[in-house]
Length: 221
Image 1: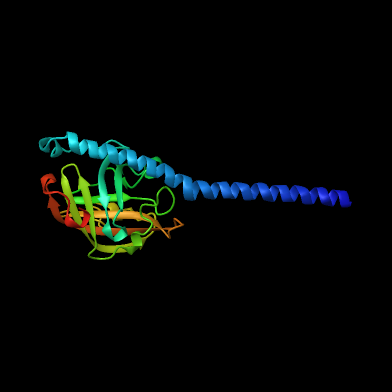
Image 2 (image 1 turned 30 degrees about the horizontal axis):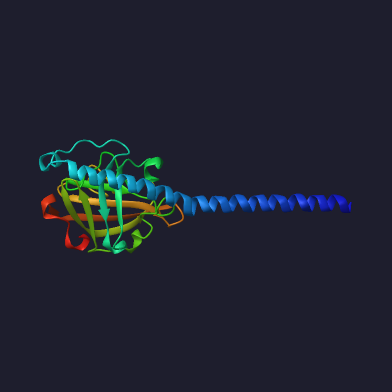
């Protein structure tokens, strides 16, 4: 009997050790390794974006084409989230794309266009670009660096919605079917930070546009 109990205890102990190892490995992957992978992808995307800026003429910069999934579109700068906060926005919102950085909802407006420039991003793991999106408040600036200039958006609202509230990325955020008349932006992420039962949404309106030759706004120079 004692031999059986000792054997059972040993088996249980081994299972617990194995489970602990697997949990530690999973935690390392989620909290460390995914961030490393995303940082590497972002470096490559940023290098490609900077090269594109250098090689395109001013005339070419004015010609916009439909972006391909996985293509780097522009660079977001949000000073409220840190002086060094910058992320390349990628075309697409599938999981593979979002694991590399914030993703542009296909079909939504591009920066500076009339309509809603809608972007989604992770709030935890994979670089967690929108980890502190809840810190934004009305009046904060969001800067979009594109190959055809700089676009400055000003935060005007934020709200918590259900995952099915897709009307927030409509051309007029929150009002599907309406025709847009102004240039807006919507940023979407999970809420709470380590969950996905809700969505945190931040809305902004375009307040300034700068030509490439004018350089970046002073806040991000």
